[in-house]
Image (cartoon, rainbow, N blue to C red; front, side, top):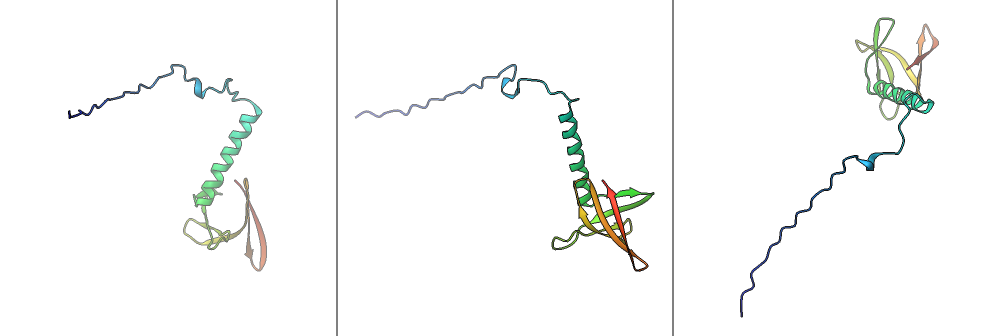
Length: 115
């Protein structure tokens, strides 16, 4: 009997580079000035602002610094000042608006913030 030698073949696969990258081309250019693109940019801006508000980023109103503090167990939370003192309770957080309330001398005062 004869010994069989193991034959090892190396296969090299070359990647074909496409010069013009046709796979990612949708076929037509995007008109950045169109109403749809303006609406999508506005929507992305409001989403970004809303996310920053919910994370507790600071914001200024009349030269005073405030931030949102989330509540426990799914509660909406409250708005506190820069030192950490409670200013008002939050009752609604929308896409572009935050509504809250506070009590001053036994009377309920509604607060509305436009993001």
